[in-house]
Length: 417
Image (cartoon, rainbow, N blue to C red; front, side, top):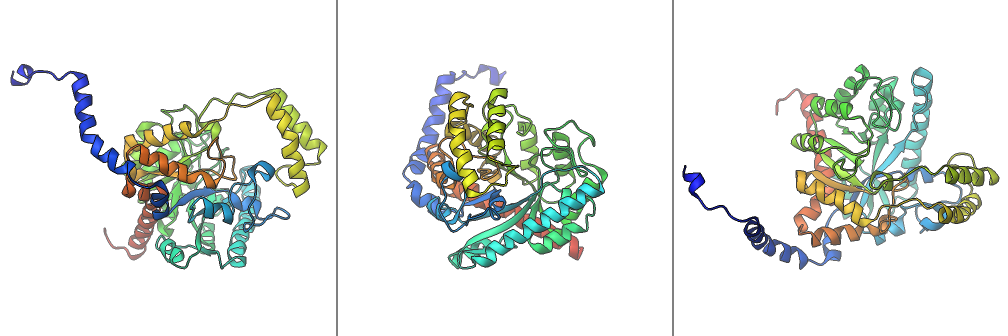
């Protein structure tokens, strides 16, 4: 045949040709000043667990804190240094017993946390403003403030009564996920044996109600089957607010290529997170866990609640434990493997960033939000330009929110697309 008669190019020639085509693009990206590129983007993190710090005695978001001393990773001075314009501040609710009593307790916890976020914004209104729509981000930035979106991690606060979704929407929540580390009454978790086969019947109604309200559905922590069903059922794009790529590191919290393609096909976005245990093997060390438990007991610590003195003592007491039983820790190279894999797979329209800060995130080279400009530098070095940087840092997440708002408007007016 004619095709068979054509000479076959050697793979080296193909690679050389590809490089010749790519070199002008790479050169153009390399010529961009990383600081200027970072400053020009709307830098948005989709998952700040920082509200958990708001009630800590003596802790203020206006003060610069040190991760080495108090474990916190987000505050105003470090946001300024890292060029962070805002983000989604999380109402996180640990999963308790499923059923009416557990869901009622979760509801009360979430209302309190939502109030804390709103109080922080009101108290420091010269620096922060609550954002309720995608367009609010640019308006707030024009006022020389940082925008605060609200999100809900784990849907147990609304699982017992889905009408509460409107209540939390009225409080300002614009992103919501159905599940966390354990199964909820809405969905199976990626890290527990399934009980629903994905979404529960209430979980399916949860998807519809989120669409009706214009709330972005967050698939992070959901099982593969639950994610499949959310992507299929939702009329708006889905976001993974803090997840990684399973084809880079096989962990239940990460998402495989086929599902990332399905997510992107519906307009969705994966926000690559910086959680070490989802990036490199992290073995359990019983002796280390026992030593940490004994340290907490000796300091009178119960759970996450600590006085400033207790926290400092715990951080200092942890140093010799870390030295004796070190845990492998991911670094920026590991993070970029996930980032670049996702970009190559689904393109810069469907990838973003979340450090999962103040919720267990943080790796070598990205200990807190001050490390964000390094991601921009590495993206530029990999050949991505300003338009890509703009999408990855905030444009994609805001586009997904804007799409959810459009679905809400269409559903509420009954108009077709």
